[in-house]
Image 1 (cartoon, rainbow, N blue to C red):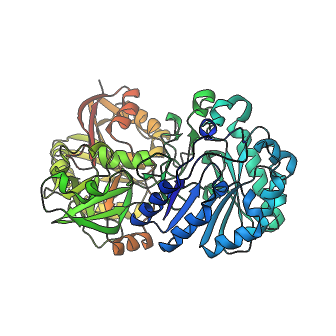
Image 2 (image 1 turned 180 degrees about the horizontal axis):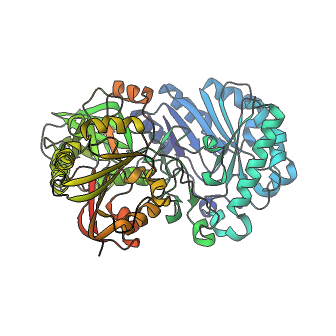
Image 3 (image 1 turned 135 degrees about the vertical axis):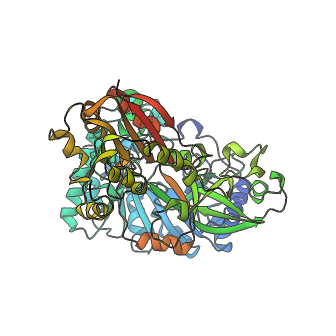
Length: 603
């Protein structure tokens, strides 16, 4: 659990792509840095990492390391490494619990590296790698890829081959600071960077047999690095929780909001962990280089694990809130959550990479889909029994920090799942005629449909890819016609005759469809005039769990089955394109369960 503290922005290199190009004259006062080290310890961090500019230029470096060590914290540096070419400084820092170094080296030769940093720096930086390797620290060497070095990455691999304990990382140049100011001169096309990184990694693995150095990347969409998704690396994968710039009064959570996933990424199965494109690159070059991955399933939930009881709240006023009193800015608005039970307030956190920061925050705050798991199952399968909804506490009303706070949540007594499902069940009870049910295997509404099928009011055809589930359903609906196939296969094999159905059902199966559009088009043709399509499904949700529940879920056999986490709006866009008209719509919101419903008719 690392805290990143910027000490100032002066540097003895002059990289054209420097993030802090325009503020290099700004340095923090020593006592400001000391206060922030103390604050990081109070927040519960286990490592202080100092950065700049170039932190090793500061004469207080050893004093700050000693202060960190005296607080029981490990120490780390983000550095150009030049000062670490001196073995005596490295030795002193190691005695002060130096455990992590993230070092910049942008070329495998002096010619390329010095060209990029605009200083005679290569020999010192490379000597630092030699001094740090073998010391038992977490050593990372980062190469920012620009137009000037994109064709020379193999040379960086060659330079790093002797240092098997290091990780060599290739990072797309970010359009920030100098990277934004000199965008046209510095920034290669992302496809060219990805191709060069793939080549460099393959070259390195061939040279070493995978024994090290190891390889990583950042700032590159996963769809361009197939087979290397697991090598993605950013501040979160390094366990950075918070960071603070010069002049900021308190820490802020580390996030990935400087990167963007355009509309083309909406249905990509890799959306959660993928960084997408840097903001700025998308604005200049668009999204034509992206190739979204659609034929892979993704998660529809994430869990929050307990971290700490943070205090008591006896009053009904936000002024008594321990989160408000201590400061809300270090806590991530999406990834952290505070739950009140009685007077106690506890903090929970999710580290999931199945969802982006933006998706997590929207699920938690905009849609209000946060639940306590009260079951003993690896995965809840009866939401009404297994889950209790959490809602923002009334204590938060009127609090000036509410828009930026992770929020205080409390459980509600109401069974929102049964309440919201009542309308679905009532609607299904009115069905008559020829009915097709796609994805019927789990049969959540068999108790409603079975009597209609038995009476002959409904001539029911159920479709599901699982023959085992269909056999279980046959026992409950012996007169039903059941077919073991996929909805996609049914849509393309001509089995759905035009104007042959009075109703079609997609009951909690919409997000299981790999490609909804052709299925919807086939259903629209198969409906008789006035025929109805009923679509019911769930959006993603967060689960607040105990440590034992988290461990059980992680060990459990449940796999990903959803291809998307669409809500009513996303589904209706596809359905409207098939010429169907929406006549009833139930959205998801903070006062509802995570279930939505659409009823559409053919004209």
